[in-house]
Image 1 (cartoon, helix red, strand yellow):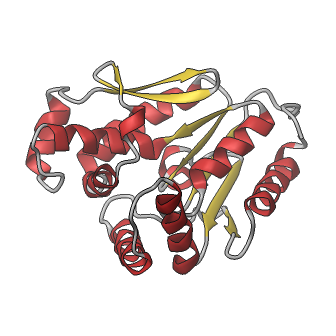
Image 2 (cartoon, one colour; image 1 turned 60 degrees about the vertical axis):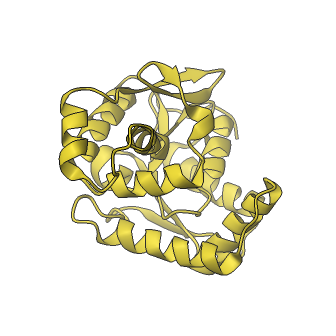
Length: 232
């Protein structure tokens, strides 16, 4: 498959829990289709990063509201050679966004309507201008409710925790599988039960469970779903 879909603008929404492989799989799908991939999680991580750097608790809703209202944390996105670059107040912070503390802060700030409203508006503006695959946790339900393709990418908690555990080991970081699993389940609970835009499949999403599948097998299943919808 290549970027030969018959429609001018392609709109693909991918949602799923932490550790489901969204970032790497969506990068590969977007590359195969010759379109851009917007990782919305990076935008929430940028807000979390700003809070941490400024000594603001990611659980302090009032402080976060002031931060957004005063435009203290201006998030923007650029694409360089087809890859997303996430900017915070004009500075490229992409390299810091995968830190464990930043991920936890992102999960905390994402609970609040003021943060979600700000970032959803940005994401929708970006999506108006181009063919795009967007991944996150509320894309098919909130950001792109009219997307032609909606995929809910998931896997068992144990499978997702093992992937994350191996990533940490490969990065030379000490890791304990049971702690990774416990943290992942806590993140799932927070994402699925938050009051604002909780993680759930859109009613018309295709559920893709990749438990036990290789990266290549998961990628092919995603491409098959897109191909069926767009005749690529």
